[in-house]
Amino acid sequence: MKKSIYTIILGSLVLLSACSEDKTTEGTTESNTEVTAENEVSEGVAEEVIAEESLINEAEVATPLNNNEIASKYNYDQDWELIKEAILSKDIPGVGNWAASDEVDAEYLIQGASESYVLEALKKTSYKDLKVDSSGDEVYLVFYAEELGTDEEGNEVGTSFSIYLKQGDPSLLVAYYIAAG
Image (tube, rainbow, N blue to C red):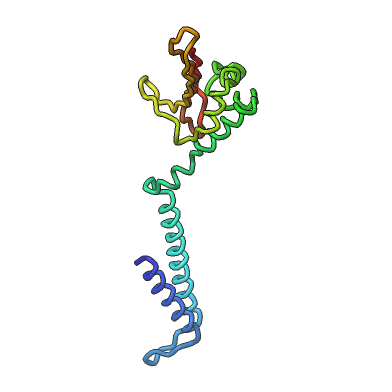
């Protein structure tokens, strides 16, 4: 609908520009300057219409209804892959860069995650596999790895390692971690 209106306006401009020579209407003569003034006004209207069309197109892209545009602001899945890479490569400053606060000790986190069962789980866990924990005041995404076994007396024993992540603005952050067992 909008494009057809713009096409009609632009078509009218072409017709007006074709009439820029002297023309006679019922015995009266219009000069080139009068027709040129009309053309300039029409061209100004066309420029305004084109400017409005670009604003409309930009507004369509930026509307909150376009979820793909909004989702692209946050790359949490990529952040998770970078966090995992820093842990797996034992990059203390790299892990520290993802810490939500100074309370997260990157060296201890890497040490706790150095168990083989944790490393294997890290390699296999994608962003979509993280569990949501909303039991407290805040919502966290949780990486969880556990190893179950039996001791020499036949009792079931286990160890686990969890990393709690916050969806910050604009990136995923390590809030805290728990090693148990």
